[in-house]
Image (tube, rainbow, N blue to C red; front, side):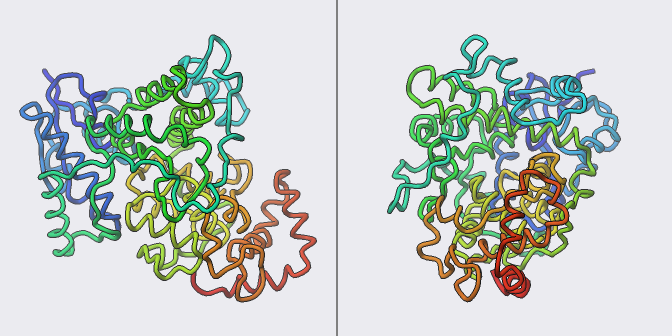
Length: 488
């Protein structure tokens, strides 16, 4: 019996097509589960419909309320293992043939073998990343790392150019919306008017690739026009440049329309051809074959309870209205205002805004990490169930107590001042921790340490910050001020 392959979001590229009959299901109920960014809903629907259009007569394309309407009672279906626990349970409960997952540089079997060899040692990203480099030969010169170093992170922490509003790079490649996008927009408008959907965020033009051809065009433009500057300004932020030198390729990779191995090989070829510096190339390679694969495999390795059972720092505050409504206009802190504005406008922010602006703010104030993880998943176009647990619960909020990161990623306003142009036009002063001009990041940092000191006291990387807290002459006043600070 010939099996029909059901392909899902995350599996919409050529890598998931072996030439047989295919099936795509657009289930309306998926979009009604929780509040979602409009750009994310548009991207998902556009990607499903574009893939169905590409496959033509080879695909069964169903537009229904829920998956069960199509799959119940069918015995001729196969799937490539899906990208979430819920989806994996569903396909197994319906007796489908399950093929090994694809779309990552390291397979689940390869990661399991590596993790098994670690014994009781921590599953460190750097160790995993080096193993992948050696195994694949990517960015290697024989048995040695290209350029003589494994990691060029110290070269990728440059502050933005003084006085610049942008990096001065060409605009990223943007897709052109078509009739399929127009149909998506009409459906979202109607579903929202009917009260079926709860969408938030701007209905801007689609900014992210949803087909293989679009993704290839975006990759080519990034490599030719932005890769060289990616490394030096990887951690920098400018209010007038929401993309900086970032690639905007996370969304098409997570949709499955862009193969990460191909992406990395393309970028590495630029280094070997002498067209891109090693620091930029290595930094990008580390993000894709290191961090992206690492996060994927830890999602399965740490178990389904990881995102719900970890709250090491006892953070229980509900997310504020300004986050939930993406109301950047109500946010006074300039850096946070611009980060949330970018999320509202584009459903996206680059990693330093996610970690050191939004995540840092949430960490300092003790927002519930589970609520924050769901918010990131639903508000970001590249947010998926497998992406955000390790990124938010572990890396950003230290809610796992150090499984992923050895210390909390908390900082005061001085870091943001160094790495952005936000502070000059902000009503708060990053050097002030008391009074009307007290920077909520600077004061919030000390209040965070005061609140979490009992949990962090045994962490050797926090010994110096906690010693600084003990010497703080106005500690009680700062803590009291931040306890009653109103608004963002």
